[in-house]
Image (cartoon, rainbow, N blue to C red):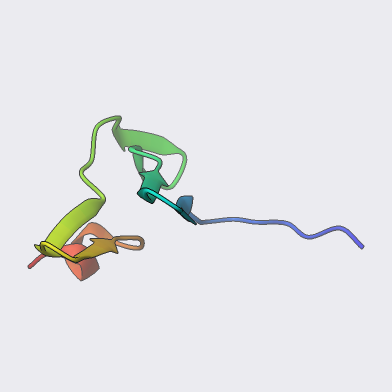
Length: 62
């Protein structure tokens, strides 16, 4: 089975004994065009909670 991914972003989180590591890609695209190579996709909601963003830039505005 071949799956063709047309859109997407990568967000990963790993919990371990001493904490958490969160990683995301930092690229923003518009079709085949790279709109930015440095987009902030991890936001601190409070000292105990992080959020990651994916999708259209307008969807991620706050």
